[in-house]
Amino acid sequence: MISRRSALRGAGGAAAVLAGAGLLRAVDQGLVLAGDRPGLAAWRDWDDRRYDGPLALVSAGVLAASPHNTQPWRFAVGRLGVDIFEVAGRSLGAMDPFGRERLAGLGAAIHNMALASTGLGRPAVVHLLPDAANPAHVARIELGPEGQGPAPHPLLSMIGRRHTDRGDWRGGVVSDGQLAVLRAIPLPPELRLLIFAADSPQGQRFAALTIDATAAIVADTEMMAASHTWFRHDRRDQDRHKDGLAVATSGVSPLLAFAAAMLPEQTAASEGRYWLAGMRDSALPSASAFGFISARDPYDRRSALLAGSAWQRLHLQAIALGLAAQPLNQLPEMIDRQHQLRRAAGFGRAADALLVDPAFRPTFAFRLGHGHRPAAASPRRPVSEVIGQPARLDYEVSRAAAETRAADDVLDRRRKG
Ligand SMILES: Cc1cc2nc3c(=O)[nH]c(=O)nc-3n(C[C@H](O)[C@H](O)[C@H](O)COP(=O)(O)O)c2cc1C
Image (cartoon, rainbow, N blue to C red):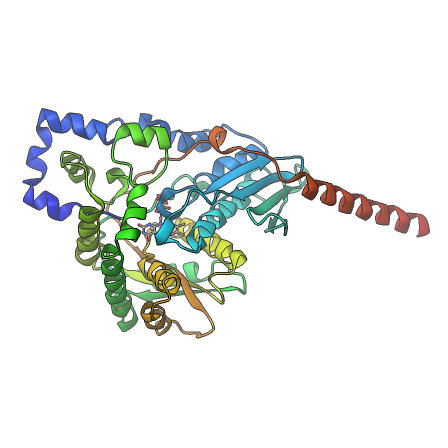
């Protein structure tokens, strides 16, 4: 999200990398010995298949995308499978005033977990928002008996390879064949997916609007302060929190990131300037395609969860095709912000004009293309840090009662038949 390229040009760039003080600072910023970082253990746990049964689902869930890497989740493993809970406090504040993006992050985790169930050989049923009395209980994934599930899903092996790529890409086109595969991802009726070439009139309009929306966010001190809260500047913070954004995943090359580590810690205002310059000079011009996931009602909680699942699926599919992908959500974020502040819906109207079906509104925006090198993994809180309380007792009791009733009905029918 943050490009330090312009700063580096002025700072004399990579020549300064060899300075001893710089090396220490780079170590401090978490750019050296990356493989051993505690925040990356969750990726190794998944690769090593450390967990089995329902915990394997959690191990996949924590690797999902989430806004600013906030990881707004908590999981509880129970008799029937896994419950997923929203942690509203892990929020983006003014950047996500309605929690729409937070729910999308949860939807992304749910999608990874559903895919992971195919690796266990157990059938899985996903119930979204299962408990009307507890809206934070966003999903329950019920696992069936072993040996009765579908074959491992072809995208299962992409879960550990999917990383947001914020780099300066190589340009070129996404082929028609690749586009056809991406457009064919399964989508619920609540959503639509639209992908268009970066050099099409629609693509150019998307880029211009995204620059305008970025500039509006940068000018909004409350939004920038909220975003800044999730920026982890030094290694101690990164190792302790195991979340958020950092220079190492900001998209600059490893050498430039190393050099950038020598610059003083940025303020929210300087982060904003580099981010805007990075959008205009590199992220948008080097993309091959842009797109939207749109929803009939972006603020409907179920639709927000489904939109996040759709993004996770699209990103995993893009990785399987050898493509780079990055969400670019400044436009939907500004639509929310104007809505929250009861301002004229300028961004909403402009974005609606890009969509084909007026009944659907944009809820997730992204770019696709050809990266230079695989993107870096970002930190995660491991399974042991995200396991929490099981679902409400009342909910469990009513579920058990419903199960008993169903079992009684089956017995009755058998007796009568
Ligand atoms: C709802 C949502 C919105 C996001 N918006 C952006 C965005 O506007 N720009 C960006 O660079 N990344 C965005 N991301 C990506 C997250 O920052 C990323 O998933 C997180 O930092 C974890 O990194 P990873 O995807 O590489 O595992 C978004 C992700 C989600 C789920």
